Amino acid sequence: MLKRTFDLIVSLLALIVLSPLFALIAALVKLDSPGPAFYRAERIGQGGRPFRMYKFRTMVVGADRAGPAITCRDDPRITRLGRLLRRTKLDELPQLLNVLRGEMSLVGPRPEAPRYVALYSPQQREVLKVRPGIAGLAQLAYIHEEELLDPANPDRDYVAVLLPRKLALDLEYVNRRSFLLDLKILLWTALTLAGSVRASSSPGLPPATPPKPRFGLSRGEGVL
Image (cartoon, rainbow, N blue to C red):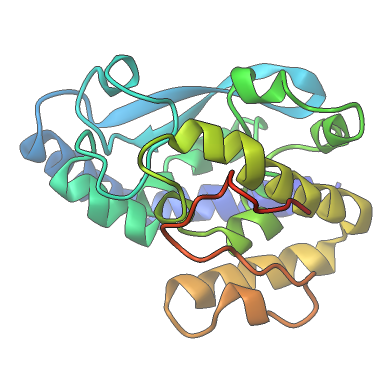
């Protein structure tokens, strides 16, 4: 109850306070490339229920039909403004609407697309017990995950290595979840995005050392 009340209050206040920024970003997205300002991605939420996750559009229209589902660094489908929005995570702001609607939480496991959830083991499906979140342990550890993937086959590398690692952290969150841990994650997410600290050195959080960029994730690299 406390978590949901906190989610409602913070998301509502943030939507009100940030409404001018929302309007500015939406206008810039439309000016930067033809198409809508927002993108709705199908994701799987609590209890395995599908929902539409909102984001500011960062790719050209029809990008999902013109390449792999996973994006990597220098993906030509990402717009100029989209690169900035992704780097700063401003493209995630519309997910405050998902929080307000009860589909997401401020903190929780990152929601995945149906095609990846179908690959979960019974143990990994435990992450579906809670609402997915905008911020989380996996999001902190792999805050710029697209820079880690092999451009030749990002989807293969994501499934082989990054997804299991992220799910291990999400399971850690599910098992340890508390309001205090949520506050820690929100604080360290804000500081990490501001460039003040590294996610991997966050006190009180499970250690997670992301692999170095531009390496063959699926070639000889183990998983958690």
